[in-house]
Image (cartoon, rainbow, N blue to C red):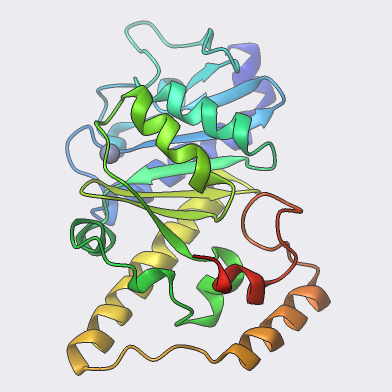
Length: 240
Ligand SMILES: [Zn+2]
């Protein structure tokens, strides 16, 4: 095994598990989606290009540095073409360890509808873990424009809808945790859609948001987004 595979065996296995979950849940089709895991200051594990996520095995996971130099790739394997986008997020969010980008049907539906319903405070757990799902305007996949577009959003939350494209989640713990968030928000999207069909998307009132702020303080949970930017959930939901 390569020294990176020896040192980061557990993290590579987690990335493979996350790929399996993304695929078996139908969050990607064909070669869609990409996942990455920053395991050290200058080492990022990342999915290979042109491999279906359900087929990603331990030896297929690539490793790059923060300039995109390939540190490890199996013969015939190359890191996803989306690597500059992932590296840019890790640069803008030094607190982030895991990134999952996929096209879950519910979340992607909200992204096509350009709906802001998932940025409302509708459910406590998504609020605590993810913050608001922010809508990032459409730009061509793989383009610099898309990466630049993300800059103003990436510091403000841990979950993003990409207009007419899909979703992206980040976690400060691990890539598996980012996948947990994707599943949490896909389920939330289903529930919000049902609420909308039933005729009323109710929101958690402001004074209850203030109570959630106290929960976060007690549990010592960080406010979603880059640390220190804002001090409370109340502030988060007042932002435009
Ligand atoms: Zn995509």
